[in-house]
Length: 70
Image (cartoon, rainbow, N blue to C red; front, side, top):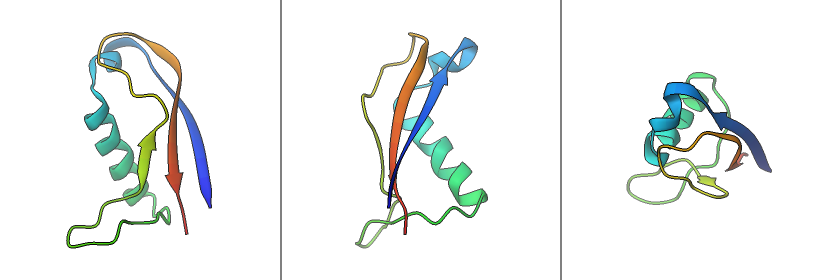
């Protein structure tokens, strides 16, 4: 099952880069026990991707994160 989530970056959070945002979502899903598909390999990681990655700095209201669940 594929899910698309919408989120925004406002205020001081707008300075956080994409890789850090990705890590925050990974931690949040892990703590909430969300069933996510992991990659196959020696060091598996969650299958998450940004629809349109942005750099740190501009505020946004509609950023999208795609994830695959079991």
